[in-house]
Amino acid sequence: MKQIILTGDRPTGRLHVGHYVGSLKERVRLQNSGKFDEIYIMIADAQALTDNADNPEKVRQNILQVALDYLAVGIDPAKAHIFIQSMVPELTELSFYYMNLVTVSRLQRNPTVKAEIQQKNFETSIPVGFFTYPISQAADITAFRATTVPAGEDQMPMLEQCREIVHKFNVVYGETLTEPEILLPSNHACLRLPGIDGKAKMSKSLGNCIYLSDEPEDIKKKIMSMYTDPGHLRVQDPGKVEGNPVFTYLDAFSRPEHFAEFLPEYQNLDELKAHYQRGGLGDVKIKKFLNAVMQAELEPIRTRRKEWEQRLPEVVEILKEGSAVAEQTAAATLADVRKSMRIDYFTDNNLLK
Image 1: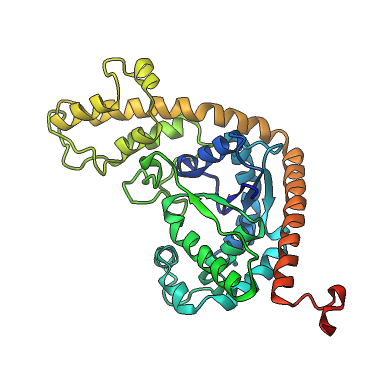
Image 2 (image 1 turned 45 degrees about the horizontal axis):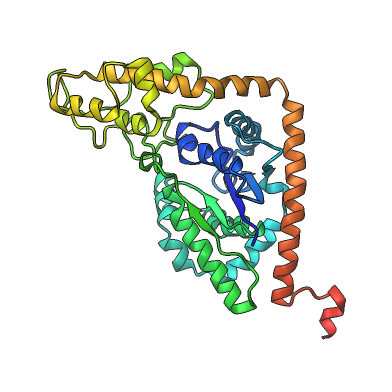
């Protein structure tokens, strides 16, 4: 069986460091691993419209922003097909057929959907498109026969629902669809990077992000304002590292060479944590170290992004070519689905059989 990746992001804003450690960095590693036959990376504009229907311009404007972020982190269009979801109409038809395999109560139990509904204050008026986006996501994944979906921990319920749809379809209509596996980041700190305000999730809508495209002074300002341990009031006070966003970010980003370069009095992160826990280490010093680490990580990404910003027509061509390949692949899957469902009426005069 071919090894195929499908992953993507909603174009509702520029991508941030939560996206980077949660999936983007892993995508680049997988892309360069040589272990995958095909890689599809989707800019999920149709999904973004499910809760931005009154502001399509926001979605349109951010398509290129997300594409620039992809190219900036090292996604290579020679190795991965970057495409726009709405340019592949077959995905909509697949979603329509899959809707018949899922109950309303099952959608209501999806933890990711429940959390998103609460976050967006949709409790009393949930758009149908938003409510059914796990089904749409299943269409996206299965259209490309994805075997692997690199994603954050919060997407596990979505993948489980996709697998249920695949199983139900194959039981009812015969073996047709490929069951995907989720691939989580190996670094536990990367599973869900908190916002700089200490909230559980870094989110564009909550305004608690460090963006990949942020300028150095913006990164520094955000890091120096980060939430830490509220009980660590004085330098000499013992501090907590669990649930402390500054240390979570250091878990996600710092490497031994960073200590040698920026904080040579410590060998590694364990030493730094131990000092903080016993007291005598101030938040400002740790934040300054985190700033140095983040600047080193994000500077090459920002530089590549600015280079691509000077080549926007080329970026559009990359998206156009990727979307054409994606549509061709999805059309082949849709043809198999229609055949399995016996609704390919005019193929080989099937309606008479």
